[in-house]
Amino acid sequence: MLSGTATRTTVLDEIVAACAPWSAIVPAGAEWEIIDLHGNQAVDCLLYNAADHTDRYSAQATVAAQRNIFLTTGSVLRTDAGTALMTVLADEVGNHDTIAGACSQESNTLRYGHHTRHQHACVENFLAAAMKHGLGKRDLVSNINWFMNVPVEADGTLGIVDGLSAPGKKVTLRAETDTLVLVSNCPQINNPCNGFDPTPVRMVVSR
Image (cartoon, rainbow, N blue to C red):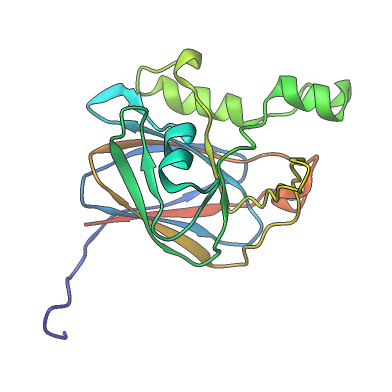
């Protein structure tokens, strides 16, 4: 081993099935890797201070602090109070969405037609993960969409287009405080955010 090279130990390594929820507490100082196994898979995400769930990720505070609506290497994910929850250490994709939100059965119906009303969606995944930690619908806020490509046109129009990721690409974050992570491995099949074919992703936490 080279002198000065830190040795890290994997404490969690899990595959999240296509369309499934996932949650974990990432301890302060630990690194969390989100790996897009097959490429073009959106991973919706919410973050909470594990010691105080009311201190949670704020898209507005994060965007305002970094003056950029997209996340990449160096981005600090903050709460309304300015607390740093996580920092993006490395990013093999280069662009992650903060503004498009999470799909729901209601939004699917509005955008794509009543025939989609039965389809599972990210809000339902978030609620399933949240319940395990004593959280409910009122605790859900604007989320991060890892790997999701949402360009903004000059007139302010948002697009949801094919992702920039590819098989094996990953983003690595460091927890700045003990952080509860809720994830929806997005089940959307009505737009290109998952290439119309949701696939598994891998979560690795190391210390």
